[in-house]
Amino acid sequence: MSGCPGSRTIDFSEKENQEGNETGSRPSQLRQWPIQLHLVSPLAPYFQGKDVLLSADCVAYALGDFHKDYLKGKSLAIACPKLDSEQEIYIEKIKSLIDDAKINTLTILIMQVPCCFGLVQVAKEGAEKASRKIPVKQIVVGLEGNILSEEWI
Amino acid sequence: MKNALNKEIKDIIQDYPEVGRILEEYGIGCSPCSVGSCLLKDIVGIHNLDPQQEAILMYRIEKAIYPDRDVPEPKVDLTKKQAPKQISYSPPVKKLVDEHGLIKRLLALIPHIVEYIENSVNVDKELVLQCVDFIRAYADKYHHMKEEDILFKYVDNNAEIIQIMYKDHDTGRNHVRQVIEGAEKGNKAQIREHLLAYRELLMQHIKKEDEILYPWIDRQLSVTQVGEMFKQCTEADASVGDELPKKYERFIIELEEKFLQEVA
Image (tube, rainbow over all chains, first blue to last red; front, top):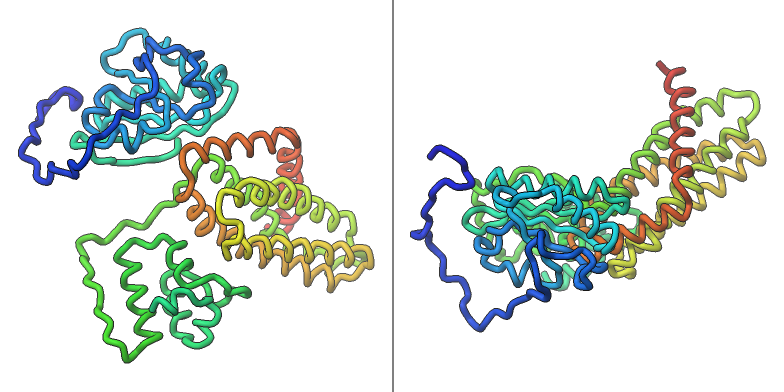
């Protein structure tokens, strides 16, 4: 069990209680395209005055009820702080979302692995550069899809 | 038990004083409350106890009210003992908590101010009116108005706990009017009585807000509402300008230099 926690091999396929409630279909709560932070424009109409979810790429796969509990009612941008390049552009986009799109709140959803906290840092830098101030929330998701912490930062 | 849950707490404590003592053990101070019109069910819900604590509390209350009833004792899993809860506020609510900090600094100075007035030959009317100005402009207008015009609008305005907060605000304003009258007449006893009463009222009021009311409101707010409230509070602050809170912080620092250094 050594090496980078973000890429360490862990198998929890034998985990119990994986059935959940499978009744009914789950409609997508996505209301926009594109979603990748390099591709979205802060000037897009779906960001104006909205609550924005900035999610690390892996979160949607780990969090069983991502659409129902976290995406619903929010506009989305996704990014990977470990693998994405030119992240200074991300900082400017966060700043523009706050100042130009005048978003209402920013919720950052990240995995528990250390590299994911880089996305929080990017968001904080963007928020600090912005002239408007908005509430920013950080939610940390465990590798098995549990919520480890949820706090306003 | 359903009937008891829907009764006002002052009536329950009057009929069953043991309930007041039990609540006190859980940090729920209903016995000394002057109003006591909250319903028992609201009191338990509002304090956000962990489920095990709440189950034991309800069991003890039920036994106190119905001693002959066969009430099953809740099973407690000691391995699931929770760490003490740390209160985490949303940004707009945190701002209101921070504003309490400056108000509490004045409250801490009031006994020194009262002593100074009593020991002076003539009432220092200017000092009293400066304190009144802080209370009216900072505590009441700048701070309480954000509570009344913004924060309380996000919950049921008729909830007993909100009504108690309004009543506290009104009682505080009455004390301030009495302090002014005392200053105008040079009546030291009147100033003393109402400044100390204001201090006691506000200390309890702020404690209730920081520890119970604000966390209760925060738990009900959606992310969208937190954003809206933050915007409204920011606009309310901008309408009075940056200088107002700075001016009153300078005033408190000057008072602390005058009174706390003399004590030291």
